[in-house]
Image 1: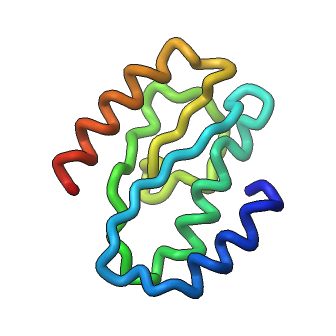
Image 2: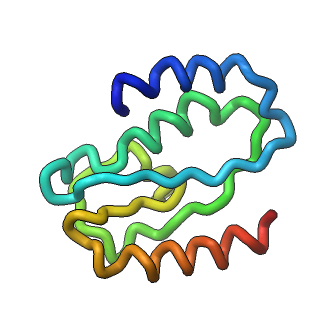
Image 3: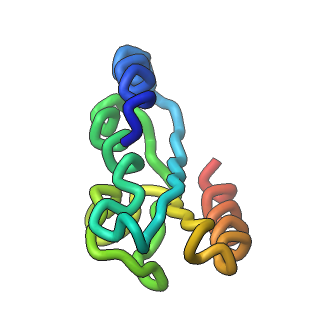
Length: 106
């Protein structure tokens, strides 16, 4: 996670998120950072997973090229990972499919 997000995470940890619905997305570079691809999304989730919020929008890892990610929880990404550098041709389709999936849960 970028350094400028740590204060934001502390703020979220201090907030009452009970009953809130959260859908995470993260941008990353699966080629240059294949061992930590969208790891910040996983750090955010791990920091607030016990907040009482409901998390929606997990995504299958199929079709993604990466070695490891803290954002993979129980075999799926905890939210929508995007790589607009190496896989920009897949971005629009991924966003459209993700929005269709989470809209049903809102």
